[in-house]
Image (tube, rainbow, N blue to C red; front, side):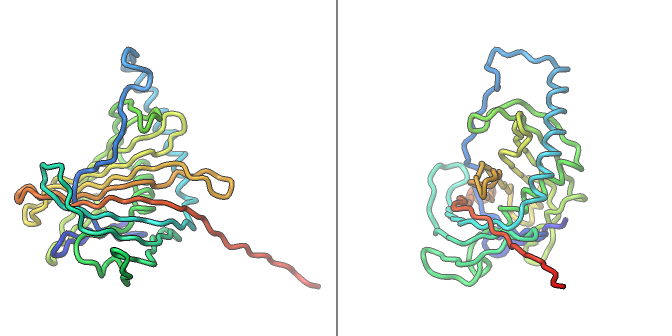
Amino acid sequence: MKFRATIWLQVCLVFLACANAMLAAGPADVPTNVRTPNGPDQKLTKSSVVQTDLEILERARAANEDAYQALQSFVCNEQIERYKGSIDGDFADPIDTINTKLSFERGTEQYTEIRQNNHPRTSLSSLPGAWSEGEFGTLLLQTQQLLQTQHVSFDSFVDVDRVPAALYRFDVSSEESPWDLEVAGRHYRLPFRTSVWLSINTGEMLKIERTSISISADTRISEIQWTIMLDHVDLNGKQWLLPRTGTYAVLYRESRRREWNVLNFSDYKRYSAQTSLSFNN
């Protein structure tokens, strides 16, 4: 699976595979409550941690493969709030708000009914500044595949919104990376680190964070971050773990500034086609 990223005058990072993505800037700001799941006094031996984390990882590989193979035919509303500010400050200067209808079919995100500050737009790519595509299914599918193929390291036991979880990390080199960054016609293959929080009980992915800091100085970008938080959604009598919030962030340390997009997903629906076949004698 190959992803392609493009940056134009104002940073736009595009991913192409089953979908595209353009990243804005700013640190991932989705809160996560972190503590040891069994309390501060719980003692775990090295051997018990290794055994436990391997079991969780194998459970996650099986659970997420099944879940995302069936990740088709979803529709939701996506709101993108765009900001800019100082790289070190807490002040956020709002740029605009984009609302769109997002559907996911055959591994590709489709964006319709796009409105920028309530003004209709033909496509996200027609917007100036930073915009993003691919956050719904592309990141989930790719993370699931990389969990199967990359060397995954256990980090720690934590909680994600009070759900006991295990944190794992894996690195993807520039040679293996599907993340291709294009700036002013030049291409840069980006290495990145992925952190993924997996439910201890079910193996489901609760949070995904991707960060790339080894970016060519020619781009003047010091860091790119991509974070998605997932939550359970009940649809047609079945429970799905789907994106709830997200953040795309681009940092420019030389100019001490950042830009970022805050994403919110709501009003999920799932559609399906019913076909009947009959034979007449």
